[in-house]
Image (cartoon, rainbow, N blue to C red; front, side):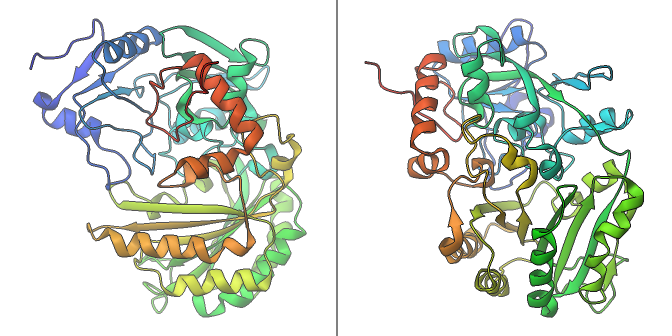
Length: 456
């Protein structure tokens, strides 16, 4: 086999040894794929050349930014990976509170750049998450109740389409494409640059977490639900069922044991934060009380230690139409059967600015949902079946209170029926028509795929 080449583009193949292995490694260790080549692109022109190379050889294409796709879409066996990580520019415009960011940037890097000016936009809850896939799949983050989803803050995007065209998508340029990018995933092209709206946030906020032994979860989660139902949109938070880590801040008798942790932040004035979050301390005396004033970038990184790359992951999630006591008890009961100390379950309050955006303004659905749940299975050894079964059992148990619309980024596996129900019939039809316009051959199919509508 001849060595692949694309003029002006660095290509890595298996012959490059460690560099190739480093470049193909992704967050979810369940996917250990060996691409025929990895194109390290630096410009939109490079992206167009890589697309043309793959089309000419009938190679499947995967697009890789942060590599966090839990479904494994960031790589492909014996195909071409378009690796956009070298497109890593960040330009903060203080005068109009916007930021232009390359598709290869992670949220840790973007937050650091914007926080130098006391600005932020809704970003991932892990610093290593890529801006690109996160935004295209909706973008749920701690700031969402205050400032909406990441896709709600997207102002424009530079896109390379399946035929190599370089387009700008915004409310005034290719607005149909712009609509599809805000939740329709990577179906319509390779985005090389995003422009986001920024908001005054930090650089110091009030937030953190408390932790209780799991035996207190029935009381703590109920009280947390009541607190969040009445909380202003400046407050974000989630109840997390977890195994307490063997960390110095955890009391010795709780380390390695089931626990419930309440993550919360207040995004109003810092001096109001302690009063706003004070009820979290009064549910019952927490074993760990980490709440306090801290840099926003520190709060954004707080879940990083519990989610390192290189573990095996399987996720399911859903919106909840309500969170009655029966739903809480069911969720807690599922936690008893957790198959790994690294797995977590989350109940989080939605609402606020998420529901300000009209339902038809983006492909995203479920904007009226008051609550959501995540079940994240995470483990180390290739003993997958029992861990996957636990996650799916949890999802099934929550069905009586579930409603459609959860962003597909939070699913390890999707099927056509899930995709259709997530968007709803009207939006799905609009998305398939958009796909037919911008990618009629379904070149970009390694994603939560939307097939092109049949030609008339």
